[in-house]
Each structure stands twice: as structure tokens, then as C-alpha cells.
Image (tube, each protein chain N blue to C red):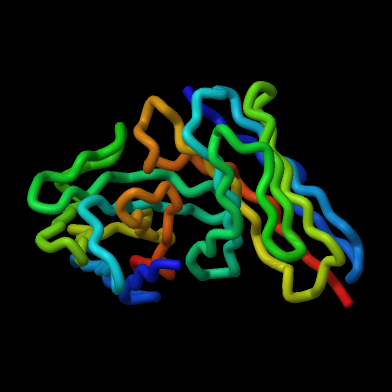
Length: 115
Length: 114
């Protein structure tokens, strides 16, 4: 299957700082990528849809100014958590689709801890 | 609003047992249903994808069925092994969100002990 690489896998940051998470499609081009968040023992929740060359689409209740998404190329989307707070501590994971396929491929995820 | 429920939330079995994990969804207007495996602190591995027009898919010891009209899917694991221990997630692609927006269940945490 297609490979989606996410980096870093773990990050600890101080409250008030910003953290950037990268999501790359390694062997295919992805015009659209998706960012999910997962709190402990809860389901994955879609945060936003990242569109190459245009603005991201955010789900209801997700602050677009806090979670900045950039999709500058067909193989890279980044999620920046700005002015992070302890309540932003979570597992963030991205996904992408191979064109003409309906199967989702996910990155390895990033465990963010804000102290 | 589409909701996905997985039962049981947790399961602990001895090695060798055949297992059934259940997934139900409230709106049958879906493109497909996908089963994933998630290991602790790790990403998701796609196990099986069932298109809305299909009834089941098989891969090795795994078999997934889909009854779209009743809003149910089951994942059958034959001859379970300790290496099968993980959280199993099901997700649907609803018509309302576009085929590539997934709605996930909370998962079934499976522990297979020797």
C-alpha cells in the first residue's frame, strides 16, 4: 500500500510555544490530506481537510487560527499548533488517499505533550 | 449525523480463539467501510476496505462483512494470536462528507494472551 510518513512521532513543548508536524506522501501525490486528533481512549476526530494550493477546510469547533495548516506541495502538508496549551496535548495523525482509490492511508501519528 | 459504535469496547481472550468484533453505524448512506488496526501510540494500519456494494472482504485470517441496510459490520478474526493484540477501529465514509472523510468508532481493545 501507499506510504504516508509523519514527523515527529513525539514532541514535548512548553506552554505558549508553537509546534509543527509534517505529513508526507512518500510514493504518491496527494492533493488532499486530512488531519485527525485523538484524545486518550476516544475516537479519532477529523480536524481539517488540507488542500494543495488552497486554504484548508476546518471542521466545526476547530480553531483555524490555532491549528495552522499549509499544503504547499502535492506530497507535504504541515499542521502547526500555535501558542500550545496543555489541553492541546493529544495524538495527531494525518491521512491521504491515492488518486482514484477510496482506501485511506495514515501516517504514524504524533504524540504532542504540552507542559 | 453519522455515528459509529463499536462493541465490545475491550476484549481479552486466550490464544487460538475465533473472535467477532462489531461495528454499527446510524446512516446507511456511505461510500465504504474500513477496518483499521492501531497499536499503542502508533498510527493506523488499514486491514480491510468494503465498498458499499460489497458484502464482505477477506485477508488471511481476517474477514469483514457489511450489511449496509441494517448499519452493521463485523470483523472476524480466526485463530487469534498474541500478535493480534491491538485496538481495532472501524470507520465509514459518509455521503454527506465526501468519500474521503472518515467517521470513526471508539475502537475495540483486543488482548490475546498465550
